[in-house]
Length: 135
Image (cartoon, rainbow, N blue to C red; front, side, top):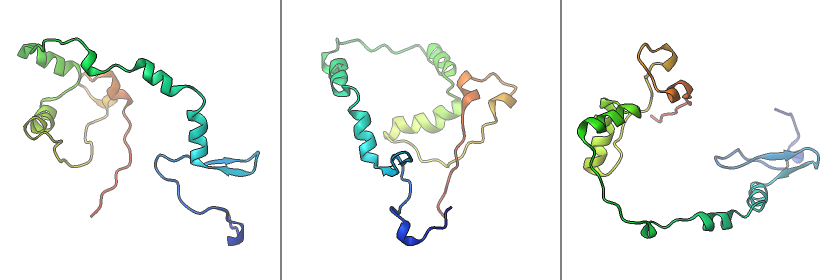
């Protein structure tokens, strides 16, 4: 915090999600979010790269959908870390209603490093973020 007189304040506000705040100390100015993003967007031909790599679904060859055997499906679910609880409480309601179920916030899963059970590699690199609730 700096104790400045109000006449010296150039800009008031707060940092917003998705916005960039840059103070160019060499030039002695605040660089606008749009100026930064326009500069970065103009550095490479992103639109051309996108057009060259775009594949339309209607141009893909037709494939016959295969239904996996139950034992193979369960093996895939275990391999990718899905639990019976997650399937029962998240995926089954999604299949029935077509919408994500409402649930409480929070994660009471013990840290992977403290677990005695085998855990997937990415479980060791998870990060918890602050959560806010409204009364």
